[in-house]
Length: 133
Ligand code: TYD
Image 1 (cartoon, rainbow, N blue to C red):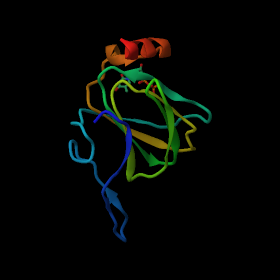
Image 2 (image 1 turned 90 degrees about the vertical axis):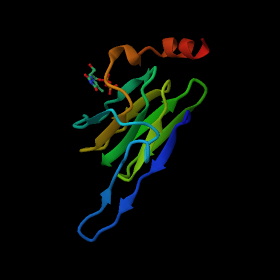
Image 3 (image 1 turned 135 degrees about the horizontal axis):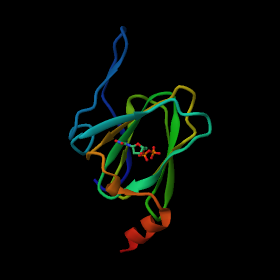
Image 4 (image 1 turned 30 degrees about the vertical axis):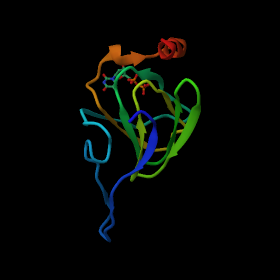
């Protein structure tokens, strides 16, 4: 899959409380290798501001809300995430930034690779040049 998209996850409704599940290669188009989460973000802060050469991601607002801005070098798209049963698939080679975090928001990020700093492109101009090459 080479396009970003919002993916709706299974929602098992229950009067005791709802349950949502993510299975690798089933609900997200990659094997889940790494999981991290972003929390306690002070008001007005932004996260991200980079692209990965190979990592694919799936981002869910488990709690609260935040915006993910994706840029593929041609178009910028803002995705407002605020549902724990919907996530945003981010293909490799996509510039992504996260901002507008609500108080107590919790961002879950699933990744297709182990952490490797060499997989990051942190300079937007380098990103644009990499796309052109
Ligand atoms: P980074 O991905 O740069 O955060 P953001 O893009 O949200 O600003 O990660 C911040 C720091 O955490 C950076 O020093 C790398 C480290 N880090 C890990 O060690 N392992 C990980 O899996 C992640 C995502 C980050």
